[in-house]
Image 1: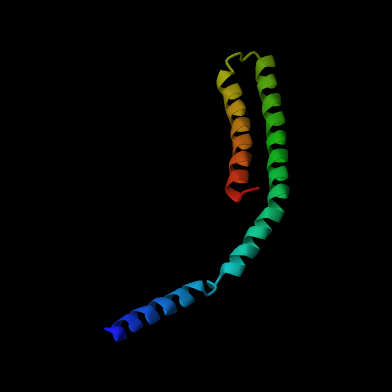
Image 2: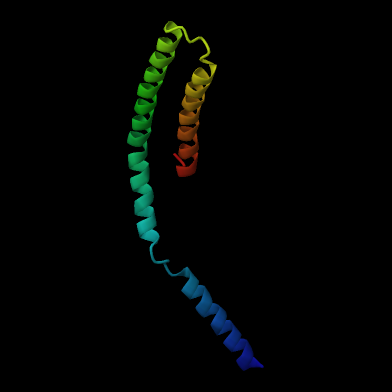
Amino acid sequence: MKTIRFLIFASLLATAIYSAAQVPGLSEFSQATSQIKQQYFSLSDLAMVVGAISGLLGGLRVYANWQGGRHHIDRQVAGWLFSCIFLSLCGVFLRGVFGL
């Protein structure tokens, strides 16, 4: 009976020691996380610049259509509005995912 208890205790102790050992790849995961945090802000700024340029081009396109006599531009305006909202929400979502 004492032998069984000793074997159970020894196996539990070995399991605890083995599980406390460092998991392979943990340092690489930490390094990748720090690289993502460093590059996030520059990628975020790049996305905002691309969004601003496409917004300006969209505004010019809507203005040209309006001046050209095509007054049914509701779909174009809604498309550009929702794309701007989408870019803004993507930035917020990614900031939440990466914990920044």
